[in-house]
Image (tube, rainbow, N blue to C red; front, side):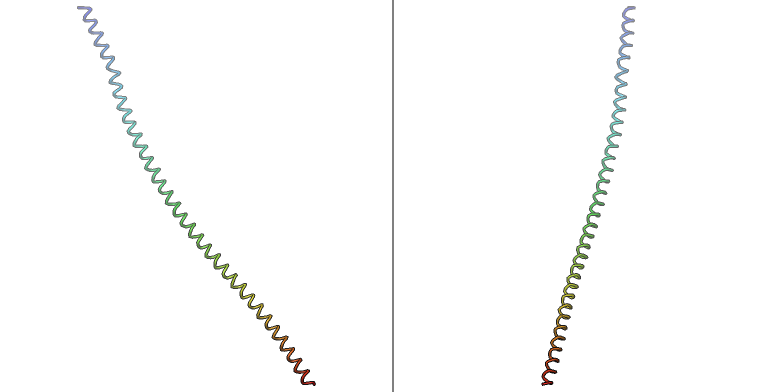
Amino acid sequence: MKNKNIILTLAIAAVGLCSVPVLAQDASNAAFDRMDSVQTLDRADQVKSQKSQDAQNMSDLKASRKETKSRAKEARNAERNANSAARESKSAYKTEKKAQKARRQADKQTKKAANAREKANDN
């Protein structure tokens, strides 16, 4: 009986010692589960913030692209206007040059006609 009591005592102590780590593992698993859920929530928040930041960046880039297109269109219009003005100026220059040449020729013809009248009057 003495041996039985000793064996039972040792068996109860052994069962108690074996069950403590199992209980400790359950507690640590719960702690790990909580940490995992916190990390998961943190990752979800990071993903949301990254998505919102990406959307903001995209919006900024689209606005910048629209503004750049607008500036390019204005520049093309200004260039077109400048080319048109240059063409008109060149045309006006050529027209004035032709008009001056025509006036010089008219003056020459007038002088020739006056000289011819004088010769005719002298004869």
